[in-house]
Length: 127
Image 1 (spheres, one colour):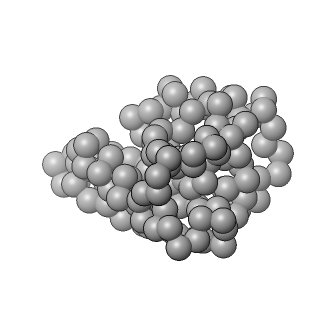
Image 2 (image 1 turned 45 degrees about the vertical axis):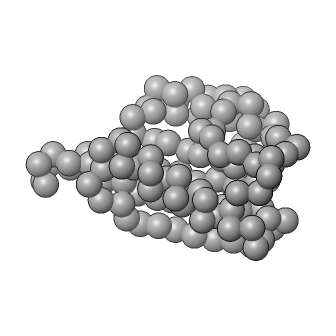
């Protein structure tokens, strides 16, 4: 990872750090204001065992990449957990730094830590 960059879980304060600018690279973000952001962050806090988002911030503390991990609790395979990696997004300015790969590696590691026996459904977009 480039010097000064850090990977960590999403924080409620990341709205001001440009999180929405990064994710709008992969989908529309219309209607997401501070109030709706705060409500979703509260929902994520309550459902932290099912939904996990990481971000990479640069030396200026701006979000430059993100990815999401969802956990599916199965009735098959010994009531196991399948992890789904979704919504990996990297800011255009970060092209060539392998930032997206770092997000993917972190999410695969987190899936194992949460006890998932399988990781699937990787979606990747870089603009």
